[in-house]
Image 1 (cartoon, rainbow, N blue to C red):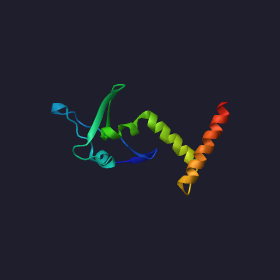
Image 2: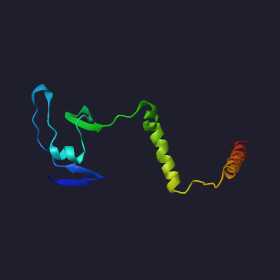
Image 3: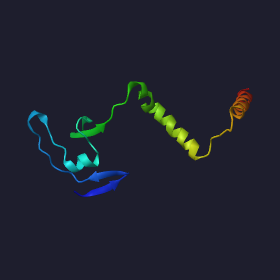
Image 4: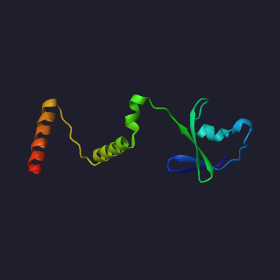
Length: 113
């Protein structure tokens, strides 16, 4: 099966599959291997513009779902950008951290006036 790289993912040439009894289709072996699919994996199936789209899914524990929210992921990306741009501070001890927080607070309060 011919493969090409696209945005870090494997793109494969289309393969025809047969629609069987009980609405079953067999996903081609090369696709299964490329996506590392295992028996029992969850797949999301949706209809888009007359096409059936099947997407491998993972379950996330409910108490961790907040991390995957759109808002949290946006904030994570902003934090990553700040780190890459060097807009971070590090401290050798808690006292220096607290001193910096107080200074930042004082500066913020002056700007608010």
